[in-house]
Each structure stands twice: as structure tokens, then as C-alpha cells.
Length: 161
Picture 1 (spheres, one colour):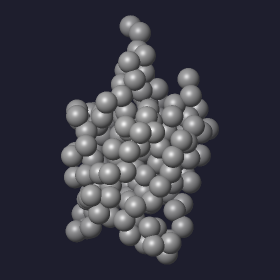
Picture 2: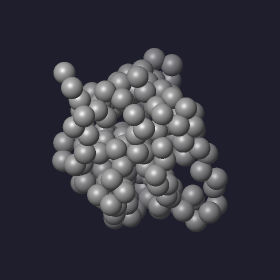
Picture 3: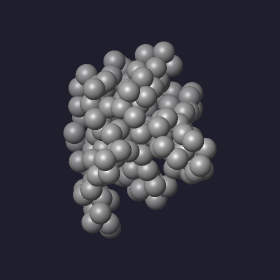
């Protein structure tokens, strides 16, 4: 199964072209090499709720991605609003995936408790918030990679018991 995957980076500096988006590169590599996914869209937006919301809606409804992976905007800074934006577009939350990411990464790095990312479903798309750093992206995504195929089968309606 090839999973249609979209990447959304929330970063003021990235949106202005002042920072290379190495976190998205990590996501791309993990999705293509370990999940067998195909990147159908990639974009960078500033840390603005309305921009994140509009992009999430477009990536799920227009591009019909099976999986949307966001990076950035998930910590405690005032401009970190990705979880709030995600919560406004999802129909159902999947707390176990976010809890698994935090719990796994906290075993090595206690700062993972500051990660506020959420996971949820919009239509037939799974949306997963990831941290903004390449290391954080790798650790958090690796923590759930083994369960993503089964989750995606369920979300897309292809799961057979």
C-alpha cells in the first residue's frame, strides 16, 4: 500500500525563507523509506492558526492525503499554535498515538513532556503533529511508525478484521 502523505511545516522563519526546512526532509525520508508512502504535497506556512487551518483543510479535502504530518509549532512559545489549529479541523482525536510518542521519547529526553502535539482524524485522513526539530521529528515519528499502517487502514476504511 502506498500512503498518500502531505507535509505541513509551521515556521515563521521557514515561511520567510530564512531557515532550511530540514525537519520536512527527515519526514520525507522516513515516509518514503519506512512507511512506503508517497509525498503528494509539501508546504511551509507561518505560525498563524488561520494559515495552518486552511492548509490542513486543503491537504485533507482537496489533496485527499491519507496522512498529514505537521512539523513545528508544538511547544510552549506564544507562537506555537499547531495543536490548536489541528484541534479546530479534526473530527475525532486519537490521543493514544500522541501519548505513545511522548512516552517513548521521554524515556531518553525528559524535555519531550513539553511537546503539545495532538493526533486526529478529518474525514479519511490521519493528522499527526510532530516537533519542529529534525531530531524531535525522527524520534517522535519512529515511536509510532510500526502502528501507522494499521491506523491508516482503519482511517481510510480499508481495515479488514
